[in-house]
Each structure stands twice: as C-alpha cells, then as structure tokens.
Length: 194
Image (cartoon, rainbow, N blue to C red; front, side):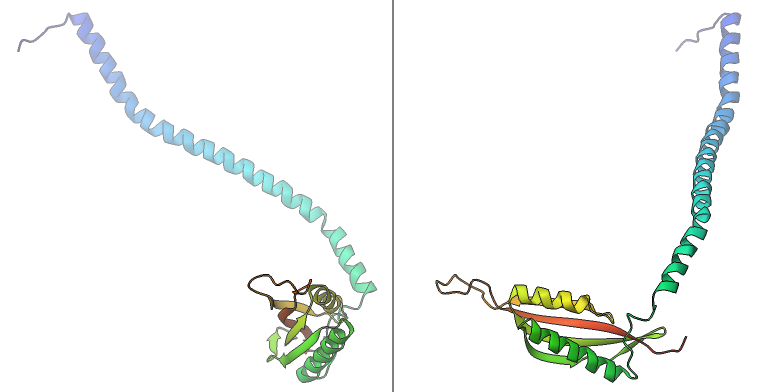
C-alpha cells in the first residue's frame, strides 16, 4: 500500500472542508430540532387562537341562551312531565292503569304487568313497569306512540318483539303475524320539594 501525497493546496482545501463539516454538524443537529419546535409552537398558537375566537363567539351568545331558558321557564310548568303521586307504589299503579287502558283501546292483549323496584336519581325517583303483550304490528305501534306521547311523560326503556309465526309458510297463515312483546315503561316522580 502506497501513500498518495496531495499538493499543499489540495490538502488545505480538504482540511478546511472537513473542519467546516465537523463544526456544522452539531449546529445542524441543534438547529433542525429547534426549527421543528418552532413550527410546532406556531401550530399550537394558531390552534389556541382559533379556540379563543370560538370561545369568544360562544360567550357572546350566552345572554341569548339565558333569555331562551327564561322564556321556557316562565311559560311552562317544569314539572308537568313528572308523575305527581305521593308514593312510588301509587305512581307505578297509575302507570299500570294507563297502560292497561291504552292497551284495551288499541286492542292489545296484556298477558302480564309487573312493577320493578323504584330507583332514586338525584331528586327524582324512577318508576318502571314491565308489561308482556300480544298484538299485531299496527296495534303495537299505536300503543307505543300513545304511551310515549302521554303527559306526565313515559319512556320506553327496553323493547323485545318476537313473532309467533316462525318456520315454513302456511297456506292459511294470517296476513299480519301476532307478536309477543315485552316492554319496560318508565316514568319519573319528584321526591324532593324545590
């Protein structure tokens, strides 16, 4: 192996180039992450400015929404959706009676009605009744609509529907199948005085 000697001018040029590279490498290793950090900060600032403007718009609408709430409160009874019974048992009995009467109106057969234990939800008591029904599809639709549009309010919590007509086709099968329905109907009763 033989050594190649470069002229003094070429060796000085290579030495200066290597020196510049060695000195600039830590500079680049420092500047590139710093530039990335700067661009992240610019993005974060733009995002914060956007959120600030959005929050200012929302705060500016606050008086409008307070006025809307006051109008609703002044014009309506806030407790009209609650069942006004002295006990949970009386409220459950009223719900059962309403369901039984509505079922009779819409020609829905009631097989079973059972009251579930009531549950407290802050100042309200949740009253639930489970009802097993047999009906056609049209009748059950009308009954459920009547229940959910009733005041004081009733809510359909769980609904299970099964068709009695399963299996193959029959020549004399009814046009509309009879459905077995289990539904949990819930209402709320105010327990604390406001």
